[in-house]
Length: 399
Image (tube, rainbow, N blue to C red; front, side, top):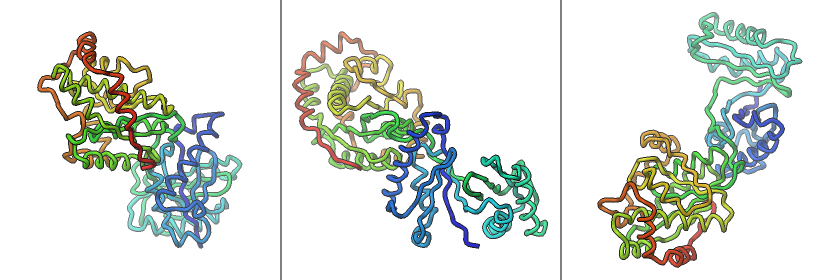
């Protein structure tokens, strides 16, 4: 018999949203279509159907021989809001038809296995057979087809066969892929990510996008003290996380004049701290003008001198917009694990300097007092320097 392969896209937190769930489902469907389009699918190639707590992805007629549906798993595995993906075959809900599908599709998959288990899920409560009865029927078919050469092991099977009886059809699968989880991007506001070439900030952007936030990136440069390759590296990082965050608008701004003025006029021990204050003020000015809801940084408490609790407090002293620091309680190894998982680590460790390594003080202050910072910052034309940098912000759309 000819069986249609489909993907069952299981919800995560969306399933708990009650009366607001339709709004999240609509946004998730839009994000799914965007992810598939970026992966080479046309909207006319596939169909998405909503059922209770899931979406069902299928290829339209005529496309089954053009595309491998398993390729869609790679794209959909990065879409926030999907907790799990099942590669399944769809069949009628008639138990005899289901058994035939088991013989044609499932039986070859368990060939050579020593043990199996069958799980039945029945969301259609009007179905005449209960879940244990369905599982028993399917288990008998598999046991008989393999002449008793395979045993049932409900606690630790070598392969697990699942049959789901839903409102429209029945679905059989043995393969389950982990989804990205989280909330659909766009469901929780807009954030401006301060994206450097390091390990932490790409991870921070990923973490906030996983909570449903739309992300744009602002990168600070210091030409000619930093190489153009430094900016190119950060653009590549933005492209990698865009696979999870959706299309990212990328902005860059030079801090060269600000850094030169800090070096010329301020106590060396305060250079990095004052620079970071300028970065935050410049980011806030840009964020407010462009209607971002917050600023996102990759700061981790105590990781470097500028990320002590005192330094973080002083850095954000002038900022009114919320500043999210999703890495704040993680150690470096935990952040590295995230970077490796999302594919940014190898790019982040490429040896190109960024603006924060220019004019680095030998003995940076770690427990700054605000009045001392003000005394140094007041040596500069703060508003003029911020305005000069702001007018030269460059934009690169939709990475």
